[in-house]
Image (cartoon, rainbow, N blue to C red):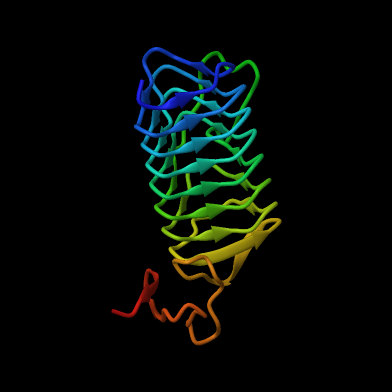
Length: 185
């Protein structure tokens, strides 16, 4: 085993977990789940079969990553995030339901307590503020927050909010494109 598993974590026998990943107490990872290298899966998480977590991902406490949730590299998933994978859930549906995949792209940040609707994509380096209800696609580098969440500007790859000229305090500058913003070379 080339990863750390807390003695009180449950990890299925058919799970892919990358080198240097930490799995903390009271976490349950089902057979068929995929977790990359150098991740930190904190206390009380549930990782369902059919989900995929990239490399260098932090999943804070009490997060359930359900089937159909794809989390790319370098993503931060705040505590108590709620992912949804069925738009029309019913307790007794006779096995009839529609899985809608959700994509969290490289470098995105999801603030604690947010709810992420199924069937959407959160773009690279996007930033979702704590407690947000995200029901629509979020383009790369966009800053969204609220109930329901809306765009309130843009963020740099370093995570800081960009000014009106799309410049960051770190020195990086960006420009608008039809697909959101892009950094100047």
